Image (tube, rainbow over all chains, first blue to last red; front, side, top):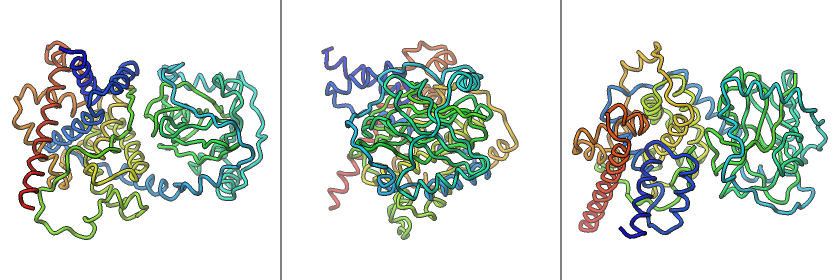
Length: 281
Length: 218
């Protein structure tokens, strides 16, 4: 078997593995490398075929099919209404960035390997982490001026007037290397199930290769952080205000954290945590 | 965690063209434009239509794959949010709606299962009700690719089909399948791979035949 054939054989096996049960990060990196070697294979073919096969098997196994529970259907419908009513257009997003100074246009890229596998903590890990954050770090006051754009700025201000709103500044003392200069805060209301991030000093990302993702730590709900949505930071802006897009209801957030992930985000992050905003009181 | 270059794999021309079994049926106005395109345009009615049309499909896939009711509820909410976020990427010339939706669903289900493992299922009243109300969407009846996949599956040897079902449909890891079937791990992986390649080749063949027939009739 030639070297080329061996590569194709290996890649086909890995793509089949990926489509059937996923890959660990190291094997995923091997796939990336093999894909660069011109095997002619399409990475998504196996996944698409596996997905259609899964649907075909369900169609054959009709007695196992179920109707979606009515409560879940209503919840998804409500989430859809919220999503489409709050979805900012590109124009709106651009306008909320308060361009004060043209920073050197760095481009962030997704980390090749996690520095800390922060979501593999045990069941109480997040609660403990949040407690430690509160005990160990002095929170910075909110010093950054609000965005000039009335839309999200006004929404954020209105939310801050809610009785149950919490304001959690990004704790620079525990930021990852290179992110110590990130400032701003998170404003969140449990009753409104809404919030906003204000970020200054976060390196611009290239959305084609990596996107930032917010995580909400809510130990009362689950030991696993809740996906708070992916977002981009354009180059050359000083401050952005980003609406939080929580995928699930939050009852009592203990901390907010940002990671850098593949485009579109991930279900479970391997970290590292770039910046963290613990919630006090 | 899965590393992917294109999260949903829809940014390239689809190798296999979607065909419609019920081609003789007169399409209604709403059928002329895929629901996902209407969803992407912010059509609120389309969102409701979409949930009605595909909700049971996504839910059934998640329930069968994850086993656990609560886990499936969380997963399905995440899946629909992903669909809303990516509706604008949908291109009917690239993939069928079922392929687009099921690919998003599959990636999310794999992510969850790899991270959290299979949790014991707890049968609730809802489960029992669901079990008595088979709900495979009738829209699948008209999907040519799904129909072709079913034909391929029916033509497989039962032992090969069983492994594909355990792996792709029921969410068992290769190791779990090897243990359950008392089979070497490498054999399980090879059979899953060959099964997928067989389905892929049959879909391509059917597509080529379909294209050839269209060329002849034209």
